[in-house]
Length: 447
Image 1 (cartoon, rainbow, N blue to C red):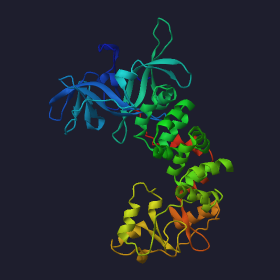
Image 2 (image 1 turned 180 degrees about the vertical axis):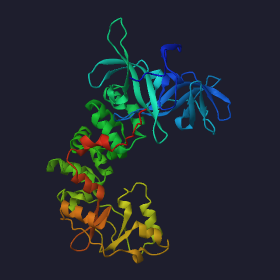
Image 3 (image 1 turned 30 degrees about the vertical axis):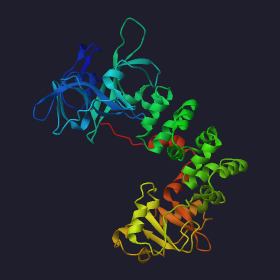
């Protein structure tokens, strides 16, 4: 069994368990405490006082973000882990470059290994045995990142005789991860919102799903409409419905307006017709109209899958104008792959559909050229009644991320994107079972 390289008690004195460091494949945090820190030219900078890690939503080991260094003036600063070039038994050396001299401030998803993790109480995930954290080991990845891969723990037996020391992988310890802290209320709603500012909507949705109902409602009440709409789009339908019912009807209507029309239609389809009509009546007419049109189609057809807000331009628009539209940061990536060319009016349902311009073609054309000269008029269009299997074969046959939906009178009704197709092809419970799997996973190389 592995043993920590060095343990220090809380008073800073060395403990009885020591082993010399023979490389940088694994470093225990207690070994770093108090080590002098030198710059690339040998100049003294300060001493290591702690190690900062970022907690994760899944069971994967947290990433080591850096170290807290105390300067000779007692001022504490943060040094990113990528600045550390070597860790030796008697010193830490930094790479060339300046050190940010701002006072270190801990963020909501950060934990200090020595100051907060050491002596923390947790349990073994498999047996439920209560343990106390004694030390933590960090290991490098192929990417040069470091992760907190293992924890040195003792079982809390309640007896005078001390239990033996164990070194366990991070994922075998329960009660220390971000999901555990969030679920059991250690993070307040305000802290969660600060944390969510740094996260993607799909990851926020994964966290919100695991929250107790009361905390979930507190977070929803505190979020702004746009952010909550983004998160709702990533939640399973039952969770979407429950949260929408929690909100006042006026705010629920505002959230539906902020959602993509196809996602709003999918959510409203879960309600009884009387409830649908009540929400639609509370929405602004220009926002509710496209949602009403989508509700007329079955959810497993091209009409039910499409979004009514693709990029639509008239034939006399220039390439420069088209590129400006698809550069919009709020435009989903799949919709940005294609510009739809139609006669006026440009709002769906449009005038006569002319064809599409692929974004790669736009990149090859002079900016002042009219897009009519770059139109692909040979690409077949989907009909609104096309089944999910027909839509799937269409995307596979033409290698598309986005495709037009056109009615019998050649009016563009909207566009289907590949992400909506995948959403309907996956099992109904894929958001419940798969959200943890779509977040990034890092491979730890164990020594």
